[in-house]
Structures are given as C-alpha cells and as structure tokens.
Length: 114
Length: 111
Image (cartoon, each protein chain N blue to C red):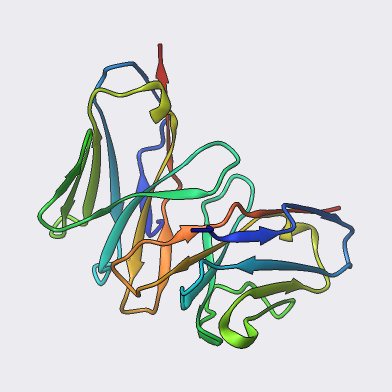
C-alpha cells in the first residue's frame, strides 16, 4: 500500500513569491493533517481536514496560508506571499480513524524562503 | 510552559542498555497518546499508541499515568537501529483533532 506522498520534496523561493505544496494521503483516509516544523522548534499542527471539509484550522499562522482539499482526496497548501519565517519542513499526515489511531506521515516538503 | 514536555536529552547509551523516556502534558482533557520516532531528516513514524493499562511491543513498553499527566517509554536491550529522536504526541480530542508534539528526545545507541 502506498504511503502518504508529498510534492515537492524541496522548494527554495524568494520572499514575496508564492509556493504550493501538495499532499496525497493514503487511499481511503478521510482525515488529512498539515504540520510544520520550523528549525529548532517542535512540530506544530496547522490544520485538519475530514474529507473536503476543514475541521480545525486553529494552527494556521495567518491568512497568507491557504489549504484546500477539493474532492476530499489530495490537498494543497499555498503560501502567498512567502516570508522568511515560513521556512521549515511541512509535513502532511493522514489517518483512517479519528482519535485513537495514530497518523501516518509523508516525507515532508522542505521549504526555504530567501 | 509547553503543553507537552520531554526529557531534553540527548541520551547516549551503549548497545544492550535499557533507556527510559519521560513525557508530561499539561492539558488534563487530553485523550490519546502516542510515541513516534523520527530519524534524522525523515518523517515521524508511529512507534506505539499508549493505553491506560500500559502496553508492550517487543522491547518497547509504554506507560500512562493520567493522574500525574505523565507518559513513559522504556526501551530494553537497545540496538544501534534505535538511534533516533523520540516524540511524545498528545491528542486533545476535546479540542478537535489537534495533535500536540513534544520537542523530542534524541537517543544515540553506541557500539
């Protein structure tokens, strides 16, 4: 069974540019999550989708970040315009069940904003 | 104070040693608990869920003390391949599916 995949694996952009990250969850997983790890800090929750609906977006840092999951399959996370402090590793995870089951993570996208 | 705190580490232990990781959480409404491991520059991978009665998976034993809001992970007979960062993760179910990660404790198992 294929795991969670993310694209691109690395992205280097300049401040003010736009970047779109993509996540393909494990097939059949209704729950999809975005996380971010800024250098030297712990992994932080950004948001949670159940199918195409945003269940919890309390972790989104500001309105420069837009996440979508049209059709309830893959998800995109757009950063526009990117700032220096957006640099970090963006992880996507998916799970079949709420709550008690753990999540399966993708390999992450390493974003560098110059 | 961070919502989930862990031993700062790093832990450097010889092969075959027993090592214990500690984790505390501040939100008493937390409902589910996990240990993940993360290898350098890789994604976190689920190691085990932590149940109230405690649970064991081979060389790994996890314990939960809800009264003390404390979680532990014990690794027996450590192997070189156990070298990684161990992350304590807590799910505040009452606040949605918002998983909170601890900062992690790095383990190096030495030959």
